[in-house]
Length: 410
Ligand SMILES: Cc1cc2nc3c(=O)[nH]c(=O)nc-3n(C[C@H](O)[C@H](O)[C@H](O)COP(=O)(O)OP(=O)(O)OC[C@H]3O[C@@H](n4cnc5c(N)ncnc54)[C@H](O)[C@@H]3O)c2cc1C
Image (cartoon, rainbow, N blue to C red; front, side, top):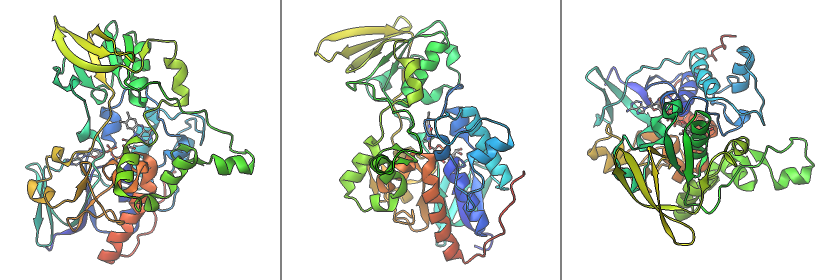
């Protein structure tokens, strides 16, 4: 394998880009594939804001210099570490700036196949190319794992879509839309639909909508700061533990990890979204969808109310803001021969403390490994753990010397 690179990185979202920054600085011979920041450009609605605070939305680089704050300063955008929601547009531009300022070459191609070969891997990129790599890091995020529960999943696409299918919710102007879910995606999609002239109602099986609290002042008395610390995943001891101690989280019993990875921090709406939802349009909590069917070009839903009563609702369209569930069988480029060797839990690969799966040389980072390292992996903040750990590990194995840091284009 003379033309073999040490590492192939698959995926160019926050995790892939952060890893590339660390690999480049460590002098590792790598190639990087994927569509930079694609989820954020192609699967989120215009007008959206991030739920994470400014300081918790930094991609990870070894020097810690290429922060969202540095980007905003350079481009004269407003920024605050806490209390000023980050717009989707700013975050996408930040990711692109991070890539170019750090000189990270990403080849815009998708992995279509992976085979084990000579102790390493052969990565197929469509009909275009085959790349030989000693190690492969999979950082494909959530785009393959959009989850629509039954019975909504049985509806045709013209009548029911996942929230990730829409970048322009103004397309629903003048239509009746039911949004299912009580998390940030569902609530923010509903607010944007309403603000863009759709008649919207939210349907949630949860008994109430949970709202995040407004950011706490940074200069609180010490005791309050100890009791309710501010962390990358919000305020409170739980968020602090998940944000700062993914290694300890990994030591928890598997059942606890799986449960916490799925349920911690949600579903909930951001503090700044509350006023755009409450009193603006109907939010029916405690309602479960029991059946769904098309009728005369519209959709009819059967729902059960909290008191057990059944009722029917009708709309032009249903948007399922029902999140993502990792399921490796949906990764078309991962063949059965490799998948069958992966230990999994809750559809996700089990990884060791270096993010290596049970197939030696194959690593996973990002939301797919939340059942191992915890809910922080579902957020950009988790790049600060995953990227340096994996880069250190592969650099140590390949024995490369660090490259000088790249100066930002400032
Ligand atoms: C609506 C919404 C709002 C969110 N808001 C926040 C927030 O405020 N704060 C926060 O921290 N997190 C938020 N998240 C979570 C967010 O998904 C993760 O934080 C982050 O995107 C994970 O980064 P990633 O690099 O793992 O994946 P992604 O950003 O999903 O990137 C995946 C990459 O993989 C590539 N890829 C996929 N398949 C292939 C293939 N076959 N070959 C090559 N490349 C491939 C894609 O092109 C892309 O480059 C939000 C998620 C959603 C859906």
